[in-house]
Structure formats: C-alpha cells, structure tokens
Image (cartoon, rainbow, N blue to C red):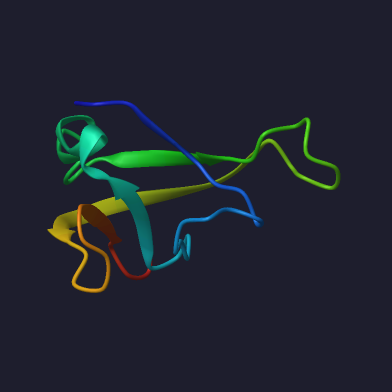
Length: 81
C-alpha cells in the first residue's frame, strides 16, 4: 500500500481537477504510478491565503500520458470515491 499526498493549488500551472484528474510532469511518474489502486490525500499549501490544508481523499484509477501536453501525465481519479 502506497501513501500519496497530491499537492493542489487553485492557481496552479497544472491542469488539475481533483475529482477527475491530477496532471504532473514525468519526473514523478514512478511515485504517482505506485499509487494506482490506492487512496491519496489532496493538500493545499496553508501559506496560500484562503486554502484549507488537507481537503479531500481520492482513489487513483490509472495513470496515462497527457494527450494535450508533451512530457506530462494524468492520474485519473476513480469516479464516485
């Protein structure tokens, strides 16, 4: 069982949608792939005004190359979790 914490910021340069997908660069592929089938926790940095710290859990269904951004990947989130 892998423990994953995905950092999410509303002003992020990444194309994240916490209920659907988490976009990340290839350097994290091994770490994120280890989370497939497991639960992760979403975290917003507290130093950003109006953020919540730890705010959600999700289950990673699969990891795929991002078809719209070279060198990027998407962790697809299991629906309804």
